[in-house]
Every structure is written in structure tokens, then in C-alpha cells.
Picture 1 (spheres, helix red, strand yellow):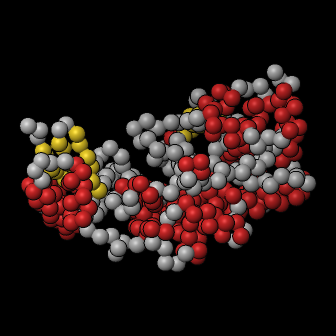
Picture 2: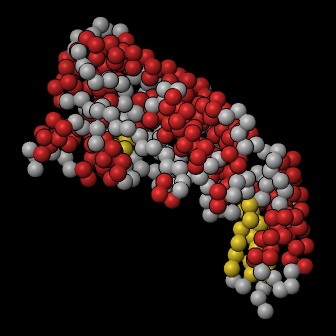
Picture 3: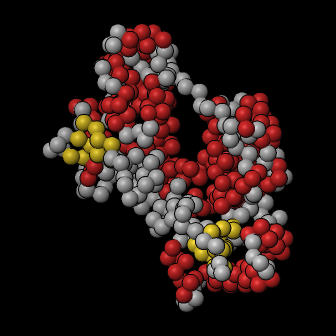
Length: 418
């Protein structure tokens, strides 16, 4: 006789959002039904929790108010599931599914899509992910401007096509459209994981399969030639001016493997090894991807990097202190984000002034340094594998996004290297 078991468990197969403050990921709570060596998981309308919280809920002792609510709710779910299985003779998953959906699962009408989107944003905010929080808030603002009373059933491939068309009419770039739609997709995945949206109605996928496909980002020609980089280096600027600030940090980024300005802002003295002549850091963009196996970027210290550190670095070079006084360790994630954003804005204004003075036709921004670094390596004879390792990309596809921005004249130069 096959054994039947019903139990509410913490589904640790896939974490939802990682909390940067506690470093503890949170997981959805689900009903697990086991029969004839087969298991099925059923999402529950219960807030996701960490493993530490789950242990307290399981013990039933010294729980917080929110933990007590989860404790009583999961006991109710478990009781309902047992009542259903007791009436099924013989038991079958098909029969259980029918009974569970009709009588056991609570309705989610009170949890609108906008409410869940805001909940997702709040989770990001609590995790200290200020930049991502701002991006998702912009995505939600755009979405609500298109559909104020959006419900879960509206999220169809046709709706997404109409929303994309709306954003294009509003003048949004292809990159912005892609960012907003990927944010929307993440919230829908969050809704599926929490039992708020049926997986069979998932709207994203290939167009050939009748799904909505997020448009790819448009590659822009961002890379500067060696001659243009040398012109920036040779440009005479007034000491203490915005142009000097912009040039200093653009070239710092260019020589430090095209590192993001955010990485420079968060650079600490312990990251600089003067003896070995290198800077080692983990990109802020990817540090949450795999906390147990962080990938370090290693950049050789160029004389210009040394010059900028000597001119703009803080006097107190304790290992944990930031190299530059752009942000403060005592600031909240939101405050650090605002200061970094304002710093990037100042640099980009200075870069526009430099581009105008040098008659550069390209849009000179902080991000141009990264593409220019990749292009300089390629023109110097470096293989794509070397460039991929320099940036620590996880796939060659990401590296090719940099190479694809090169125009045809530069491709002809590259062909000469073969």
C-alpha cells in the first residue's frame, strides 16, 4: 500500500529575494503531498521566510507576531489538506488537485497586482538594494500610467504587446522598455512562486509559441578609439573644475578594466595592493548573485589610477575606509544611492563638456569607458576569451554585446589582425 503524507514545508529549492542586511535568503512556504514516491508542491498564501524564521515557527516557541501568524496559518492549511485526503479513497493527485483548488485555496482578490508589485519593491528596499528599488519603482509608475486598474488576468501576451507599443509612443528607448518588462516579469515570477498567478498562464516566452518576447537591447557604438582616448588624456583642464573631475574618473574607469563608477565609489583601501600593483574588487552589480563564490575583478594599477588616488583619495587610509569620500559608511543604502547618482550626474555633465571641446561625435558617458577598454584590448590583439576573463563575464554572449557595438570601419581593422 502506497504511503500518503501531507506536510507544510519551506521550499528551499529556490530563494526569492536575498536580504543584504541579514545575508539570509527567504523561501516560499508550500504544502507538500507525497504519494507513491511522487511529490507535488502547492503554493500557499503565506509570506516567505528565512530558514532561521522557519526554525522558530517549527518549534512554536518565542515567536514574533508575524511568525505566530504564519504558525497558525500553516496549521490551518495542513488541517484542510488532511481533511481532503481522508475523504479520497482511493487517493489520486488529480482528485486532490480538484478538491484543493475548489475548497482549500483562499482567494487572492484582495492582493492586486499593483499591491504585489509594491510588496516586491518593499522587499528590495528592506534588502538595501536602493538602485534596483528605484528601477522597479519607475517600472511600476510606467505600468500604472498605462493601466491604472490592472488585475492578474490582464497579464496576457496581447496586453504586453500593447504596453510595449504604449511605451514606444511615450518616447521610451528600447533599453528602457526592456528594463521595465524584465521588472514586470520578475514580479510575475514572484506571484507564481507565492501562488498568486497560475503558471500555465505565464505570458513570457517565444513568439513562435504564442508568448510575448521581451525586445533585445539595442547596441550603441560606445567605444572610443585609442586616438580619442589620448585626446581626452592630453586635454588641458582647469584644476578643480568639473572637467577635471570627469576626466579623472573616466580614465580611472578606463584603466581599471572599465569598472563601473559605482564600483569606484565603493572601493576600499583594502582592495588596493600597492605591493602587487593591482586593485581587486567584486562588482556591486553581481555581488549578490553568488555570495558563496564571489568573482573578483583584478585591475593593474596604471599611473593615472595612482594619480587620481593621490589627488582625490581620503587621508585616512584604514583598510575598511572608502578610498574616495563620495559616500559614507554610516549612510543608508538609499542615501548612498542618491550620492552616487548625483556624483555620476556631475561626471556626465563634465564629459559632455569634454566631448564638445574635442568635437567627439560619440555620446561620451561614464559607461563609454567600459566599452572603450574592451575595444582597446581587442585592437591590441586580445582574444575574446581574454576579454571575457578580464570582465569576468559568465558567458561569451555578454562579451559579444560589447564587441557588437563596433562599427564596420573598426571591423576592417580587426580583420587585419587575423
